[in-house]
Image (cartoon, rainbow, N blue to C red; front, side):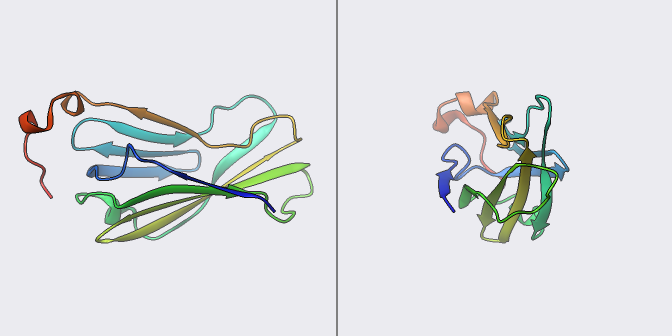
Length: 137
């Protein structure tokens, strides 16, 4: 089984004011107006969704993120209806606690099973640090 690790540097040190998750979408809204979104851009014949969340998403709010990383790989056979599957774990942590989010992607092997990530800078993140309002944390 092969695994890969990715660290989300753009999120480290940022303070989320709201963290939300449903089956196919996870969002971090940060105090500088930027947004980090984890989702899957549906193509055709694949399924990519959050299977499990361990921890309390509120532990990721109102204090800087210390850990934001992805570990992915190929799981043992899970659903015989799909030829290919990929699991992806996201690990997030602050001083208040940690959260692990498990996604599972399944397909016929032709379509992407990955989780997409989009980071959008907010208006305050474009200002030099000396001109930004003080953080609540």
